[in-house]
Length: 320
Length: 295
Image 1 (cartoon, each protein chain N blue to C red):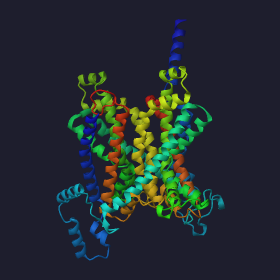
Image 2: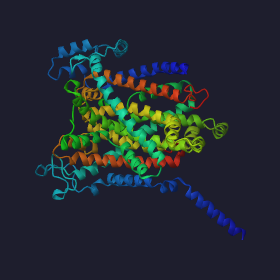
Image 3: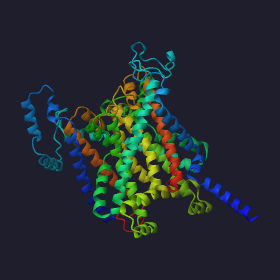
Image 4: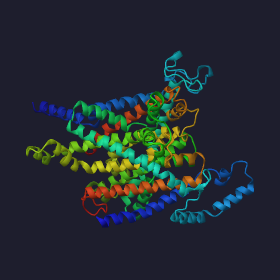
Protein backbone atom coordinates (compact mmCIF):
# COMPACT_ATOMS: atom_id res chain seq x y z
CA UNK A 1 0.00 0.00 0.00
CA UNK A 2 2.85 2.39 0.86
CA UNK A 3 4.27 1.89 -2.61
CA UNK A 4 0.93 2.84 -4.16
CA UNK A 5 0.65 5.94 -1.97
CA UNK A 6 4.18 6.95 -2.98
CA UNK A 7 3.28 6.44 -6.65
CA UNK A 8 0.16 8.57 -6.23
CA UNK A 9 2.27 11.30 -4.65
CA UNK A 10 4.69 11.18 -7.60
CA UNK A 11 1.76 11.43 -10.02
CA UNK A 12 0.82 14.69 -8.33
CA UNK A 13 3.95 16.44 -9.60
CA UNK A 14 2.95 16.66 -13.29
CA UNK A 15 -0.64 17.52 -12.31
CA UNK A 16 0.43 20.38 -10.03
CA UNK A 17 2.83 21.58 -12.72
CA UNK A 18 0.04 21.55 -15.33
CA UNK A 19 -2.38 23.25 -12.93
CA UNK A 20 0.18 26.04 -12.35
CA UNK A 21 0.70 26.39 -16.09
CA UNK A 22 -3.05 26.57 -16.80
CA UNK A 23 -3.44 29.29 -14.17
CA UNK A 24 -0.51 31.23 -15.63
CA UNK A 25 -2.01 31.04 -19.12
CA UNK A 26 -5.52 31.95 -17.93
CA UNK A 27 -4.44 34.95 -15.85
CA UNK A 28 -2.33 36.26 -18.75
CA UNK A 29 -5.42 35.99 -20.96
CA UNK A 30 -7.62 38.16 -18.70
CA UNK A 31 -8.41 41.24 -20.78
CA UNK A 32 -6.77 44.53 -19.81
CA UNK A 33 -3.36 45.58 -18.57
CA UNK A 34 -2.92 44.63 -14.87
CA UNK A 35 -0.68 47.66 -14.21
CA UNK A 36 -3.16 50.08 -15.78
CA UNK A 37 -6.05 48.45 -13.86
CA UNK A 38 -4.16 48.66 -10.57
CA UNK A 39 -3.33 52.34 -10.96
CA UNK A 40 -6.70 53.35 -12.37
CA UNK A 41 -7.69 55.18 -15.56
CA UNK A 42 -6.18 58.54 -14.52
CA UNK A 43 -2.67 57.17 -13.90
CA UNK A 44 0.19 58.73 -15.91
CA UNK A 45 1.80 56.54 -18.56
CA UNK A 46 5.18 56.66 -16.78
CA UNK A 47 3.72 55.30 -13.56
CA UNK A 48 2.01 52.49 -15.47
CA UNK A 49 5.26 51.64 -17.23
CA UNK A 50 7.14 51.65 -13.94
CA UNK A 51 4.60 49.29 -12.35
CA UNK A 52 4.75 47.02 -15.40
CA UNK A 53 8.48 46.82 -14.86
CA UNK A 54 8.06 46.11 -11.12
CA UNK A 55 5.56 43.34 -11.86
CA UNK A 56 7.82 41.93 -14.56
CA UNK A 57 5.12 42.41 -17.21
CA UNK A 58 7.57 44.00 -19.66
CA UNK A 59 9.53 40.75 -19.82
CA UNK A 60 8.85 38.07 -22.42
CA UNK A 61 6.12 35.52 -21.64
CA UNK A 62 8.74 32.78 -21.27
CA UNK A 63 10.70 34.80 -18.71
CA UNK A 64 7.49 35.69 -16.87
CA UNK A 65 6.60 32.01 -16.73
CA UNK A 66 9.97 31.00 -15.27
CA UNK A 67 9.79 33.77 -12.64
CA UNK A 68 6.22 32.68 -11.85
CA UNK A 69 7.26 29.05 -11.31
CA UNK A 70 10.23 30.12 -9.17
CA UNK A 71 7.95 32.32 -7.05
CA UNK A 72 5.43 29.50 -6.56
CA UNK A 73 8.15 27.21 -5.27
CA UNK A 74 9.18 29.98 -2.85
CA UNK A 75 5.52 30.50 -1.88
CA UNK A 76 5.62 34.09 -3.10
CA UNK A 77 2.46 35.08 -4.98
CA UNK A 78 3.23 38.80 -5.21
CA UNK A 79 1.21 41.67 -3.73
CA UNK A 80 -2.51 42.32 -3.86
CA UNK A 81 -3.12 45.85 -5.11
CA UNK A 82 -6.62 45.83 -3.67
CA UNK A 83 -5.52 45.03 -0.10
CA UNK A 84 -1.94 46.38 -0.34
CA UNK A 85 -0.46 43.32 1.32
CA UNK A 86 1.25 40.14 0.22
CA UNK A 87 -1.04 37.59 -1.40
CA UNK A 88 0.51 34.77 0.66
CA UNK A 89 -0.36 36.49 3.95
CA UNK A 90 -3.91 37.19 2.70
CA UNK A 91 -4.35 33.56 1.74
CA UNK A 92 -3.08 32.40 5.14
CA UNK A 93 -5.45 34.84 6.82
CA UNK A 94 -8.54 33.69 4.87
CA UNK A 95 -7.87 29.99 4.43
CA UNK A 96 -8.65 28.99 8.07
CA UNK A 97 -12.10 30.61 7.74
CA UNK A 98 -12.95 28.54 4.65
CA UNK A 99 -11.55 25.46 6.37
CA UNK A 100 -13.72 26.09 9.44
CA UNK A 101 -16.86 26.57 7.35
CA UNK A 102 -16.11 23.48 5.26
CA UNK A 103 -15.34 21.23 8.23
CA UNK A 104 -18.48 22.28 10.14
CA UNK A 105 -20.58 21.77 6.99
CA UNK A 106 -19.06 18.37 6.29
CA UNK A 107 -19.64 17.33 9.90
CA UNK A 108 -23.28 18.48 9.72
CA UNK A 109 -23.77 16.67 6.41
CA UNK A 110 -22.31 13.45 7.82
CA UNK A 111 -24.32 13.40 11.05
CA UNK A 112 -27.53 14.18 9.18
CA UNK A 113 -27.08 12.36 5.86
CA UNK A 114 -25.63 9.00 6.88
CA UNK A 115 -28.09 8.14 9.71
CA UNK A 116 -31.01 9.14 7.46
CA UNK A 117 -29.65 6.87 4.71
CA UNK A 118 -29.27 3.96 7.15
CA UNK A 119 -32.74 4.38 8.66
CA UNK A 120 -34.26 4.72 5.18
CA UNK A 121 -32.61 1.48 4.10
CA UNK A 122 -33.70 -0.42 7.20
CA UNK A 123 -37.24 0.95 6.94
CA UNK A 124 -37.41 0.46 3.17
CA UNK A 125 -40.72 1.60 1.59
CA UNK A 126 -41.88 3.19 4.87
CA UNK A 127 -43.22 6.76 5.12
CA UNK A 128 -39.87 7.81 6.62
CA UNK A 129 -38.08 6.32 3.60
CA UNK A 130 -40.33 8.10 1.08
CA UNK A 131 -40.30 11.48 2.85
CA UNK A 132 -36.58 11.50 3.52
CA UNK A 133 -35.73 10.46 -0.03
CA UNK A 134 -38.01 13.16 -1.50
CA UNK A 135 -36.28 15.73 0.72
CA UNK A 136 -32.89 14.32 -0.32
CA UNK A 137 -33.85 14.59 -3.99
CA UNK A 138 -34.81 18.22 -3.50
CA UNK A 139 -31.58 18.71 -1.54
CA UNK A 140 -29.32 17.49 -4.36
CA UNK A 141 -31.13 19.80 -6.80
CA UNK A 142 -30.86 22.84 -4.55
CA UNK A 143 -29.13 25.97 -5.88
CA UNK A 144 -27.24 26.78 -2.66
CA UNK A 145 -27.02 30.49 -3.43
CA UNK A 146 -30.83 30.56 -3.42
CA UNK A 147 -31.08 28.38 -0.33
CA UNK A 148 -28.67 30.78 1.39
CA UNK A 149 -30.91 33.73 0.55
CA UNK A 150 -34.01 31.88 1.75
CA UNK A 151 -32.31 31.00 5.04
CA UNK A 152 -31.42 34.68 5.47
CA UNK A 153 -35.01 35.66 4.66
CA UNK A 154 -36.51 33.25 7.18
CA UNK A 155 -34.04 33.24 10.06
CA UNK A 156 -32.49 36.70 9.82
CA UNK A 157 -35.12 38.97 8.24
CA UNK A 158 -38.40 37.44 9.43
CA UNK A 159 -37.58 35.63 12.68
CA UNK A 160 -34.48 37.70 13.50
CA UNK A 161 -32.90 34.71 15.24
CA UNK A 162 -29.56 34.62 13.49
CA UNK A 163 -27.17 37.10 11.90
CA UNK A 164 -27.12 37.10 8.12
CA UNK A 165 -23.59 38.24 7.30
CA UNK A 166 -20.02 38.10 8.49
CA UNK A 167 -18.10 35.87 10.82
CA UNK A 168 -18.46 35.95 14.59
CA UNK A 169 -15.62 36.30 17.03
CA UNK A 170 -14.93 34.22 20.12
CA UNK A 171 -13.97 37.45 21.88
CA UNK A 172 -17.63 38.47 21.66
CA UNK A 173 -18.73 35.20 23.25
CA UNK A 174 -19.35 31.65 22.06
CA UNK A 175 -22.89 32.40 20.84
CA UNK A 176 -21.66 35.20 18.57
CA UNK A 177 -19.20 32.78 17.00
CA UNK A 178 -21.70 29.92 16.62
CA UNK A 179 -24.66 32.06 15.52
CA UNK A 180 -22.68 33.47 12.57
CA UNK A 181 -21.66 29.96 11.57
CA UNK A 182 -25.11 28.34 11.55
CA UNK A 183 -26.71 29.69 8.35
CA UNK A 184 -23.67 29.44 6.04
CA UNK A 185 -22.81 25.95 7.25
CA UNK A 186 -26.41 24.72 6.91
CA UNK A 187 -26.54 26.11 3.35
CA UNK A 188 -23.21 24.52 2.46
CA UNK A 189 -24.12 21.19 4.12
CA UNK A 190 -27.42 20.70 2.27
CA UNK A 191 -26.19 19.12 -0.99
CA UNK A 192 -23.60 16.85 0.69
CA UNK A 193 -26.13 15.73 3.36
CA UNK A 194 -28.70 14.88 0.67
CA UNK A 195 -26.09 13.03 -1.38
CA UNK A 196 -24.83 11.07 1.64
CA UNK A 197 -28.39 10.05 2.53
CA UNK A 198 -29.08 8.78 -1.02
CA UNK A 199 -25.81 6.90 -1.41
CA UNK A 200 -25.88 5.41 2.10
CA UNK A 201 -29.41 4.15 1.55
CA UNK A 202 -28.56 2.59 -1.79
CA UNK A 203 -25.32 1.02 -0.57
CA UNK A 204 -26.99 -0.32 2.58
CA UNK A 205 -29.86 -1.78 0.53
CA UNK A 206 -27.32 -3.71 -1.55
CA UNK A 207 -25.56 -5.03 1.55
CA UNK A 208 -28.61 -6.02 3.63
CA UNK A 209 -29.69 -8.37 0.81
CA UNK A 210 -26.44 -10.34 1.13
CA UNK A 211 -26.47 -13.89 2.52
CA UNK A 212 -24.05 -13.18 5.36
CA UNK A 213 -26.42 -10.53 6.75
CA UNK A 214 -29.28 -13.03 6.61
CA UNK A 215 -27.09 -15.58 8.38
CA UNK A 216 -26.16 -13.04 11.09
CA UNK A 217 -29.87 -12.43 11.67
CA UNK A 218 -30.61 -16.16 11.77
CA UNK A 219 -27.93 -16.53 14.44
CA UNK A 220 -30.00 -14.20 16.59
CA UNK A 221 -27.61 -11.24 16.56
CA UNK A 222 -29.39 -8.04 17.52
CA UNK A 223 -30.73 -6.05 14.54
CA UNK A 224 -28.96 -2.91 15.78
CA UNK A 225 -25.63 -4.70 15.71
CA UNK A 226 -26.34 -6.30 12.31
CA UNK A 227 -27.07 -2.93 10.74
CA UNK A 228 -24.70 -0.51 12.45
CA UNK A 229 -21.76 -2.86 12.92
CA UNK A 230 -21.76 -5.39 10.11
CA UNK A 231 -23.83 -3.97 7.26
CA UNK A 232 -22.55 -0.41 7.56
CA UNK A 233 -18.93 -1.55 7.52
CA UNK A 234 -19.46 -3.36 4.23
CA UNK A 235 -21.52 -0.53 2.75
CA UNK A 236 -18.73 1.98 3.41
CA UNK A 237 -16.62 2.04 0.18
CA UNK A 238 -19.15 3.87 -2.05
CA UNK A 239 -20.04 6.15 0.88
CA UNK A 240 -16.39 7.09 1.37
CA UNK A 241 -16.01 7.80 -2.35
CA UNK A 242 -18.96 10.16 -2.22
CA UNK A 243 -17.69 11.79 0.99
CA UNK A 244 -14.46 12.51 -0.89
CA UNK A 245 -16.23 13.91 -3.92
CA UNK A 246 -18.46 16.08 -1.77
CA UNK A 247 -15.51 17.31 0.31
CA UNK A 248 -13.93 18.53 -2.92
CA UNK A 249 -17.15 20.15 -4.08
CA UNK A 250 -17.47 21.96 -0.73
CA UNK A 251 -14.81 24.29 -2.12
CA UNK A 252 -17.09 25.13 -5.07
CA UNK A 253 -19.98 25.62 -2.71
CA UNK A 254 -17.87 27.77 -0.40
CA UNK A 255 -17.31 30.30 -3.21
CA UNK A 256 -21.07 30.92 -3.45
CA UNK A 257 -21.90 30.52 0.24
CA UNK A 258 -19.16 32.92 1.33
CA UNK A 259 -20.37 35.51 -1.19
CA UNK A 260 -23.95 35.36 0.12
CA UNK A 261 -23.05 35.45 3.79
CA UNK A 262 -20.05 37.80 3.38
CA UNK A 263 -17.95 35.10 5.04
CA UNK A 264 -14.32 36.21 4.99
CA UNK A 265 -12.90 33.09 3.35
CA UNK A 266 -11.02 32.13 0.20
CA UNK A 267 -14.16 31.93 -1.95
CA UNK A 268 -15.23 35.48 -1.18
CA UNK A 269 -11.62 36.62 -1.65
CA UNK A 270 -11.57 35.13 -5.17
CA UNK A 271 -14.91 36.67 -6.19
CA UNK A 272 -13.78 40.08 -4.89
CA UNK A 273 -10.42 39.71 -6.63
CA UNK A 274 -12.13 38.87 -9.92
CA UNK A 275 -14.54 41.78 -9.62
CA UNK A 276 -11.62 44.14 -8.90
CA UNK A 277 -9.29 42.54 -11.45
CA UNK A 278 -6.69 41.91 -8.72
CA UNK A 279 -4.52 39.68 -10.94
CA UNK A 280 -1.95 38.58 -8.37
CA UNK A 281 -4.65 37.67 -5.88
CA UNK A 282 -6.68 35.76 -8.51
CA UNK A 283 -3.57 33.82 -9.47
CA UNK A 284 -2.58 32.98 -5.89
CA UNK A 285 -6.06 32.13 -4.61
CA UNK A 286 -7.00 29.96 -7.59
CA UNK A 287 -3.69 28.15 -7.32
CA UNK A 288 -4.20 27.49 -3.61
CA UNK A 289 -7.75 26.18 -4.09
CA UNK A 290 -6.65 23.94 -6.97
CA UNK A 291 -3.78 22.55 -4.87
CA UNK A 292 -6.14 21.90 -1.93
CA UNK A 293 -8.58 20.20 -4.33
CA UNK A 294 -5.82 17.91 -5.67
CA UNK A 295 -4.68 16.98 -2.15
CA UNK A 296 -8.22 16.24 -0.96
CA UNK A 297 -8.63 13.88 -3.92
CA UNK A 298 -5.36 12.20 -2.99
CA UNK A 299 -6.50 11.73 0.62
CA UNK A 300 -9.78 10.26 -0.67
CA UNK A 301 -7.91 7.81 -2.89
CA UNK A 302 -5.70 6.75 0.01
CA UNK A 303 -8.66 6.35 2.36
CA UNK A 304 -10.45 4.32 -0.27
CA UNK A 305 -7.38 2.14 -0.64
CA UNK A 306 -7.34 1.61 3.13
CA UNK A 307 -11.01 0.68 3.28
CA UNK A 308 -10.95 -1.47 0.17
CA UNK A 309 -7.44 -2.93 -0.31
CA UNK A 310 -8.62 -4.85 -3.42
CA UNK A 311 -8.33 -1.58 -5.33
CA UNK A 312 -5.17 -1.17 -7.34
CA UNK A 313 -4.63 2.26 -8.81
CA UNK A 314 -1.74 0.95 -10.91
CA UNK A 315 -4.18 -1.06 -12.95
CA UNK A 316 -2.12 -4.23 -12.53
CA UNK A 317 -4.76 -6.68 -11.42
CA UNK A 318 -7.30 -6.30 -8.68
CA UNK A 319 -10.53 -4.40 -8.95
CA UNK A 320 -10.22 -1.03 -10.46
CA UNK B 1 -52.44 -24.50 -36.66
CA UNK B 2 -48.66 -24.18 -36.67
CA UNK B 3 -48.90 -20.84 -38.46
CA UNK B 4 -51.19 -19.53 -35.75
CA UNK B 5 -48.73 -20.70 -33.07
CA UNK B 6 -45.88 -18.94 -34.79
CA UNK B 7 -47.91 -15.75 -35.09
CA UNK B 8 -48.76 -15.92 -31.39
CA UNK B 9 -45.11 -16.48 -30.53
CA UNK B 10 -44.10 -13.56 -32.72
CA UNK B 11 -46.68 -11.37 -31.03
CA UNK B 12 -45.48 -12.49 -27.61
CA UNK B 13 -41.88 -11.84 -28.62
CA UNK B 14 -42.74 -8.37 -29.92
CA UNK B 15 -44.78 -7.54 -26.78
CA UNK B 16 -41.91 -8.66 -24.56
CA UNK B 17 -39.42 -6.71 -26.68
CA UNK B 18 -41.62 -3.63 -26.43
CA UNK B 19 -42.02 -4.04 -22.67
CA UNK B 20 -38.26 -4.32 -22.25
CA UNK B 21 -37.43 -1.36 -24.47
CA UNK B 22 -35.69 1.53 -22.67
CA UNK B 23 -38.70 3.81 -23.24
CA UNK B 24 -41.17 1.29 -21.74
CA UNK B 25 -38.91 0.81 -18.73
CA UNK B 26 -38.61 4.58 -18.35
CA UNK B 27 -42.38 4.96 -18.63
CA UNK B 28 -42.86 2.61 -15.68
CA UNK B 29 -40.64 4.84 -13.51
CA UNK B 30 -43.06 7.38 -12.00
CA UNK B 31 -40.45 9.80 -10.69
CA UNK B 32 -38.69 9.82 -14.06
CA UNK B 33 -42.02 10.65 -15.69
CA UNK B 34 -42.51 13.58 -13.27
CA UNK B 35 -39.02 14.72 -14.28
CA UNK B 36 -39.83 14.36 -17.97
CA UNK B 37 -43.03 16.35 -17.46
CA UNK B 38 -41.09 19.21 -15.81
CA UNK B 39 -38.47 19.12 -18.56
CA UNK B 40 -41.15 19.22 -21.29
CA UNK B 41 -42.90 22.19 -19.62
CA UNK B 42 -39.62 24.12 -19.32
CA UNK B 43 -38.68 23.26 -22.90
CA UNK B 44 -42.04 24.50 -24.16
CA UNK B 45 -41.64 27.72 -22.15
CA UNK B 46 -38.19 28.15 -23.67
CA UNK B 47 -39.30 27.41 -27.23
CA UNK B 48 -42.43 29.53 -27.17
CA UNK B 49 -41.43 32.30 -24.76
CA UNK B 50 -43.03 35.07 -26.87
CA UNK B 51 -46.33 33.14 -26.92
CA UNK B 52 -46.47 32.42 -23.17
CA UNK B 53 -45.03 35.70 -21.84
CA UNK B 54 -47.86 38.17 -21.10
CA UNK B 55 -45.54 41.21 -21.35
CA UNK B 56 -42.29 42.32 -22.92
CA UNK B 57 -39.66 41.01 -20.43
CA UNK B 58 -37.56 44.18 -20.77
CA UNK B 59 -40.43 46.69 -20.67
CA UNK B 60 -39.83 48.99 -17.70
CA UNK B 61 -42.73 50.72 -15.99
CA UNK B 62 -41.64 53.00 -13.15
CA UNK B 63 -45.23 53.49 -11.99
CA UNK B 64 -45.51 49.76 -11.29
CA UNK B 65 -42.32 49.09 -9.36
CA UNK B 66 -42.20 46.12 -6.96
CA UNK B 67 -45.83 45.09 -7.27
CA UNK B 68 -46.56 42.01 -5.20
CA UNK B 69 -47.64 38.76 -6.93
CA UNK B 70 -51.21 38.93 -8.19
CA UNK B 71 -51.51 42.70 -8.02
CA UNK B 72 -52.84 44.42 -11.16
CA UNK B 73 -52.75 41.18 -13.11
CA UNK B 74 -48.99 40.60 -12.65
CA UNK B 75 -49.06 36.95 -11.55
CA UNK B 76 -45.50 36.98 -10.12
CA UNK B 77 -45.43 40.75 -9.47
CA UNK B 78 -42.87 43.20 -10.85
CA UNK B 79 -39.21 43.98 -10.15
CA UNK B 80 -37.37 47.16 -9.11
CA UNK B 81 -37.93 48.82 -12.49
CA UNK B 82 -41.48 47.58 -13.00
CA UNK B 83 -40.72 44.69 -15.36
CA UNK B 84 -43.11 41.72 -15.29
CA UNK B 85 -41.37 38.91 -13.39
CA UNK B 86 -43.46 36.15 -15.00
CA UNK B 87 -42.38 37.27 -18.49
CA UNK B 88 -38.75 37.53 -17.38
CA UNK B 89 -38.95 34.03 -15.85
CA UNK B 90 -40.38 32.62 -19.09
CA UNK B 91 -37.66 34.28 -21.19
CA UNK B 92 -35.13 33.21 -18.54
CA UNK B 93 -36.16 29.59 -19.19
CA UNK B 94 -34.98 30.09 -22.78
CA UNK B 95 -31.55 31.27 -21.62
CA UNK B 96 -31.24 28.46 -19.08
CA UNK B 97 -32.13 25.79 -21.62
CA UNK B 98 -29.83 27.22 -24.31
CA UNK B 99 -26.91 27.37 -21.88
CA UNK B 100 -27.65 23.93 -20.45
CA UNK B 101 -27.93 22.22 -23.83
CA UNK B 102 -25.16 24.30 -25.45
CA UNK B 103 -22.75 23.78 -22.56
CA UNK B 104 -23.50 20.06 -22.47
CA UNK B 105 -22.98 19.75 -26.24
CA UNK B 106 -19.68 21.70 -26.22
CA UNK B 107 -18.34 19.72 -23.25
CA UNK B 108 -19.80 16.47 -24.55
CA UNK B 109 -18.48 16.64 -28.11
CA UNK B 110 -14.95 17.74 -27.18
CA UNK B 111 -14.77 15.52 -24.09
CA UNK B 112 -16.05 12.41 -25.89
CA UNK B 113 -13.63 12.93 -28.80
CA UNK B 114 -10.69 13.38 -26.42
CA UNK B 115 -11.80 10.32 -24.44
CA UNK B 116 -12.10 8.23 -27.63
CA UNK B 117 -8.64 9.25 -28.84
CA UNK B 118 -7.07 8.85 -25.41
CA UNK B 119 -8.64 5.49 -24.65
CA UNK B 120 -7.99 4.01 -28.08
CA UNK B 121 -4.43 5.29 -28.63
CA UNK B 122 -3.02 4.58 -25.18
CA UNK B 123 0.67 5.37 -24.60
CA UNK B 124 1.97 8.94 -24.79
CA UNK B 125 -1.15 10.46 -26.36
CA UNK B 126 -3.30 8.93 -23.61
CA UNK B 127 -0.92 10.20 -20.92
CA UNK B 128 -0.83 13.74 -22.30
CA UNK B 129 -4.61 14.01 -22.72
CA UNK B 130 -5.41 12.45 -19.37
CA UNK B 131 -2.86 14.50 -17.40
CA UNK B 132 -4.38 17.61 -18.98
CA UNK B 133 -7.84 16.38 -17.97
CA UNK B 134 -6.55 15.63 -14.44
CA UNK B 135 -5.22 19.19 -14.28
CA UNK B 136 -8.60 20.58 -15.36
CA UNK B 137 -10.26 18.34 -12.80
CA UNK B 138 -8.05 19.98 -10.19
CA UNK B 139 -10.29 23.04 -10.33
CA UNK B 140 -13.65 23.03 -8.61
CA UNK B 141 -16.26 23.25 -11.40
CA UNK B 142 -17.67 26.64 -10.35
CA UNK B 143 -14.18 28.08 -9.90
CA UNK B 144 -13.08 26.95 -13.37
CA UNK B 145 -16.24 28.42 -14.89
CA UNK B 146 -15.73 31.70 -12.96
CA UNK B 147 -12.10 32.02 -14.05
CA UNK B 148 -12.99 31.25 -17.67
CA UNK B 149 -15.75 33.87 -17.58
CA UNK B 150 -13.21 36.41 -16.32
CA UNK B 151 -11.14 35.73 -19.42
CA UNK B 152 -14.00 35.43 -21.90
CA UNK B 153 -16.22 38.22 -20.56
CA UNK B 154 -19.97 38.20 -19.94
CA UNK B 155 -22.51 37.04 -22.52
CA UNK B 156 -24.51 34.02 -23.61
CA UNK B 157 -21.91 32.55 -25.98
CA UNK B 158 -19.18 32.83 -23.37
CA UNK B 159 -21.29 31.25 -20.62
CA UNK B 160 -21.92 28.28 -22.94
CA UNK B 161 -18.20 28.07 -23.70
CA UNK B 162 -17.14 28.35 -20.04
CA UNK B 163 -19.60 25.69 -18.84
CA UNK B 164 -18.76 23.53 -21.86
CA UNK B 165 -15.01 23.71 -21.22
CA UNK B 166 -15.48 23.01 -17.50
CA UNK B 167 -17.52 19.92 -18.51
CA UNK B 168 -14.86 18.46 -20.85
CA UNK B 169 -12.81 16.43 -18.33
CA UNK B 170 -15.88 14.57 -17.01
CA UNK B 171 -16.88 13.35 -20.48
CA UNK B 172 -13.28 12.54 -21.42
CA UNK B 173 -12.77 10.36 -18.34
CA UNK B 174 -16.03 8.44 -18.76
CA UNK B 175 -15.45 7.87 -22.48
CA UNK B 176 -11.84 6.80 -22.02
CA UNK B 177 -12.86 4.29 -19.35
CA UNK B 178 -15.55 2.81 -21.59
CA UNK B 179 -13.22 2.62 -24.63
CA UNK B 180 -10.74 0.68 -22.50
CA UNK B 181 -13.46 -1.83 -21.69
CA UNK B 182 -14.62 -2.46 -25.27
CA UNK B 183 -11.60 -1.82 -27.51
CA UNK B 184 -10.25 -5.36 -27.25
CA UNK B 185 -13.58 -7.12 -27.57
CA UNK B 186 -14.11 -9.65 -30.34
CA UNK B 187 -16.24 -7.42 -32.53
CA UNK B 188 -13.60 -4.67 -32.52
CA UNK B 189 -10.88 -7.13 -33.51
CA UNK B 190 -13.13 -8.48 -36.27
CA UNK B 191 -13.77 -5.00 -37.66
CA UNK B 192 -10.03 -4.23 -37.53
CA UNK B 193 -9.25 -7.46 -39.41
CA UNK B 194 -11.80 -6.46 -42.06
CA UNK B 195 -9.66 -3.39 -42.71
CA UNK B 196 -11.73 -0.60 -41.14
CA UNK B 197 -9.85 2.60 -40.34
CA UNK B 198 -9.36 3.64 -36.70
CA UNK B 199 -11.69 6.62 -37.16
CA UNK B 200 -14.41 4.41 -38.60
CA UNK B 201 -13.96 1.83 -35.85
CA UNK B 202 -14.12 4.51 -33.16
CA UNK B 203 -17.04 6.53 -34.49
CA UNK B 204 -19.18 3.83 -36.13
CA UNK B 205 -18.59 0.86 -33.86
CA UNK B 206 -17.07 1.75 -30.48
CA UNK B 207 -18.97 4.99 -29.85
CA UNK B 208 -22.48 3.52 -30.33
CA UNK B 209 -21.59 0.75 -27.89
CA UNK B 210 -20.44 3.06 -25.12
CA UNK B 211 -23.16 5.69 -25.47
CA UNK B 212 -25.32 4.65 -22.49
CA UNK B 213 -23.12 5.99 -19.66
CA UNK B 214 -22.39 9.10 -21.73
CA UNK B 215 -26.13 9.79 -22.17
CA UNK B 216 -26.68 9.27 -18.44
CA UNK B 217 -23.83 11.66 -17.62
CA UNK B 218 -25.14 14.21 -20.13
CA UNK B 219 -28.66 14.22 -18.66
CA UNK B 220 -27.30 14.78 -15.18
CA UNK B 221 -24.78 17.38 -16.33
CA UNK B 222 -27.60 19.43 -17.92
CA UNK B 223 -28.90 19.97 -14.38
CA UNK B 224 -25.41 21.04 -13.31
CA UNK B 225 -25.18 23.44 -16.27
CA UNK B 226 -28.47 25.13 -15.30
CA UNK B 227 -27.21 25.70 -11.74
CA UNK B 228 -23.82 26.89 -13.05
CA UNK B 229 -25.39 29.45 -15.39
CA UNK B 230 -27.57 30.73 -12.57
CA UNK B 231 -24.55 30.84 -10.23
CA UNK B 232 -22.41 32.75 -12.75
CA UNK B 233 -25.20 35.25 -13.47
CA UNK B 234 -25.88 35.54 -9.73
CA UNK B 235 -22.23 36.49 -9.21
CA UNK B 236 -22.52 39.03 -12.03
CA UNK B 237 -20.26 37.02 -14.35
CA UNK B 238 -22.81 35.36 -16.63
CA UNK B 239 -25.73 36.86 -18.52
CA UNK B 240 -25.88 40.61 -18.00
CA UNK B 241 -29.16 42.51 -17.59
CA UNK B 242 -31.39 43.54 -19.26
CA UNK B 243 -31.38 40.05 -20.84
CA UNK B 244 -33.46 37.93 -18.47
CA UNK B 245 -31.82 34.91 -16.90
CA UNK B 246 -32.92 33.15 -13.72
CA UNK B 247 -29.54 33.89 -12.15
CA UNK B 248 -29.61 37.62 -12.81
CA UNK B 249 -33.28 37.91 -11.74
CA UNK B 250 -32.18 36.30 -8.46
CA UNK B 251 -29.21 38.67 -8.23
CA UNK B 252 -31.57 41.63 -8.71
CA UNK B 253 -33.96 40.25 -6.08
CA UNK B 254 -31.15 39.76 -3.54
CA UNK B 255 -30.83 43.52 -3.00
CA UNK B 256 -34.52 43.78 -2.05
CA UNK B 257 -34.74 40.59 0.01
CA UNK B 258 -35.90 42.42 3.14
CA UNK B 259 -38.71 44.33 1.48
CA UNK B 260 -39.70 42.45 -1.70
CA UNK B 261 -38.67 38.82 -1.22
CA UNK B 262 -40.92 37.54 -4.03
CA UNK B 263 -38.38 38.40 -6.76
CA UNK B 264 -35.61 36.20 -5.33
CA UNK B 265 -38.00 33.51 -4.10
CA UNK B 266 -39.78 32.93 -7.42
CA UNK B 267 -36.70 32.92 -9.64
CA UNK B 268 -34.90 30.50 -7.33
CA UNK B 269 -37.92 28.19 -7.22
CA UNK B 270 -37.84 27.90 -11.02
CA UNK B 271 -34.14 26.98 -10.92
CA UNK B 272 -34.85 24.37 -8.24
CA UNK B 273 -37.84 22.83 -10.07
CA UNK B 274 -36.01 22.64 -13.40
CA UNK B 275 -32.88 21.12 -11.88
CA UNK B 276 -35.06 18.67 -9.96
CA UNK B 277 -36.80 17.73 -13.22
CA UNK B 278 -33.52 16.99 -15.00
CA UNK B 279 -32.19 15.07 -11.98
CA UNK B 280 -35.33 12.92 -11.77
CA UNK B 281 -35.18 12.21 -15.49
CA UNK B 282 -31.42 11.58 -15.33
CA UNK B 283 -31.85 9.14 -12.45
CA UNK B 284 -34.57 7.33 -14.41
CA UNK B 285 -32.46 7.13 -17.58
CA UNK B 286 -29.51 5.87 -15.52
CA UNK B 287 -31.64 3.12 -13.98
CA UNK B 288 -32.77 2.04 -17.46
CA UNK B 289 -29.49 2.31 -19.36
CA UNK B 290 -27.02 1.48 -16.64
CA UNK B 291 -28.74 -0.66 -13.99
CA UNK B 292 -25.39 -1.36 -12.27
CA UNK B 293 -25.27 2.29 -11.24
CA UNK B 294 -28.82 2.19 -9.85
CA UNK B 295 -29.13 4.00 -6.54
